[in-house]
Amino acid sequence: MPRRTVTMLASTLMLIALLCAGVLIPVPYAEMSPGPTVNTLGKHDGEPVLQISGHKTYPADGHLNMTTVRVTGADYRMNLVEAVYGWLAHDSKIVPHDTLYPDGKTEEQSSQENAEEFSQSQESAKVAALKELHIPVKSWVIVSTVVKGSPAEGRLHAGDVIKAVDGTAVKQPADVAKLVTKHKPGQDVVFTIVPAKDQAAAEKARKEATGTRNVTITTRAADDGGAKRAIVGISAGTDHTFPFDIDIKLADVGGPSAGLMFALGIYDKLTPGSLTGGTFVAGTGTIDDNGTVGPIGGIEMKTVGARDKGARYFLTPADNCAAAAKDTPDGLTLVKVKTIGDALDALEDIRGGDIAALPKCTAKG
Picture 1 (cartoon, rainbow, N blue to C red):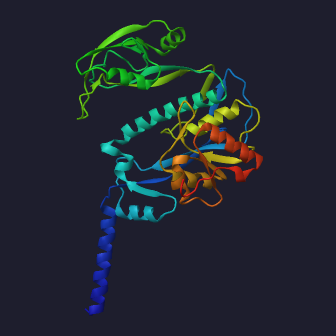
Picture 2 (cartoon, one colour; picture 1 turned 90 degrees about the vertical axis):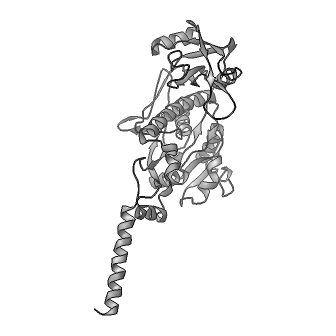
């Protein structure tokens, strides 16, 4: 057989072997790509995303779209060919698998965590919007979760309202840990609570501030390898009593990053006129009860997804601005926001046509 033919055959076989290896050998990476974007002022699966009853609402036009990121599952292991294709593609991002699923977290655990964060973001969005409108909201510190096998298991339950710790009134979740860690491991701590036996009883107790009882729990040392810090095995959170009903109907979405857009949608529906002036505005960002906007992951994928759907302006958390500005889709203006107040000011400029006044994202932030 001629040498040239042998060389070509060997090269072909080697190429086939490399391709097979690329397809068969898994690599420790995962893929992020643009996910669905939903107008908070519109409908999803045939019903309004925001449903408000018990308070006057107003028609709203334009778009205030929340954005999402689609990711590969925890159990999926991409191969080398897929990873290289993702690296070269404009509308996807390849990241280490542990970035999305740290410490061996399963897809089920990640989904549960995302669902909890999504639920909390909805509550904070409601509070932030109503506070901006000067509508009073009652807040309560509650037991958010109880760690299995901890001293609190069976003694405290998720939803219990925490009124005081060792007789000191609790005003915010951070107060609980601060008061518990004043103890040494093995010492007793006394919680004054309103038990949450069921939703109706808990609601009645919160409104009337009745039915309190004391629960004594013996602390133990935290399993963090550091100083001997006393814990009881709970995390504290905040629950609220709203003056009217606000329901957010959006399935198959997780994480906290829609908070800002939900808050703006609620604000728009509770006020006359249109926040957007009919313009297509999208955005992202966590939000807390005080209206502070926080950073999110996958900003580059969200801007691509928003622009593909027609967005002209993108409300961007200040801490995400530098990353987003590195590769801004053509025709999309990135608007820097730190609070819900910043977002409302920007929307006023947008509907008024004063685009030069907008605080735009740059590569420096």
